[in-house]
Image (tube, rainbow, N blue to C red; front, side, top):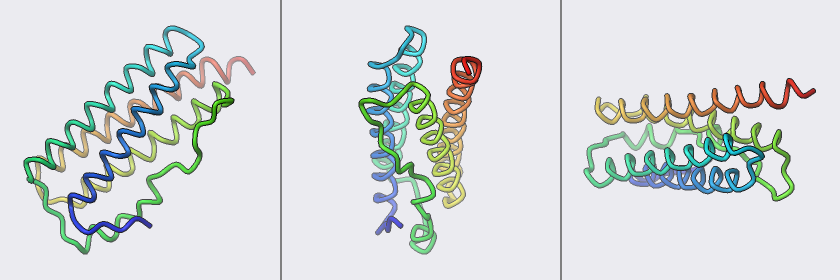
Length: 151
């Protein structure tokens, strides 16, 4: 389990996860089998950049307060996906991995929202959680349309 010393550690962790998502979606965009999905992956990469910027703004403004006790109980392993993308990954595997990553991000932001007592910060994390759940739904729809229907 990831241990955090302070709020900045949490925010740095969240920004790192967003950068990983940017890289992940940028790579998927390069490998997309349709122009539509290439556009979707590119759009998601751009949205993840916006998420990172929102978190950076919170960090720079220093408006988040969490108790150290709550910080140590985040159980970060629950919010990570341990499978890494591979160059020979199929489209189906990429969609499954994307869904898993979005679910993990949703859980992370939901938990972070529950750990803060600052209303604006809570709303930021809940907003990010909602965006991640929308991403997951988009991948589920894609999976249903192009993987399940082909089988």
